[in-house]
Length: 134
Image (cartoon, rainbow, N blue to C red; front, side, top):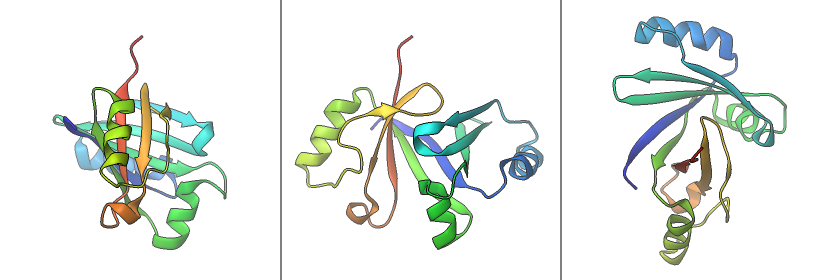
């Protein structure tokens, strides 16, 4: 894992949250994107060298909808940039971590992603991200 790629924050209303975080950071989001496979609409902000991803559920069965129902709005996950996501999934599985995704899948912001189950990371949902070469 090279660095923290972004911090994901679950929100009920992405438009209101975009206004809130634009005021907080002093600039607007740089990208809006929907990831149908995850049932989520995302918005990305840059804050210095760091990124914040806002996540709003697009259906009641999405992981974000379930998270908000259970815990309310707030920090959802921490994402780490990796050079080779398949190798990292294999390494972490061999180390005994439980993966939610056994293989990488297309995520937001031009990334291949995979999540580790929070049961194996002290309750923190960890996302692995690898930039997709274009």
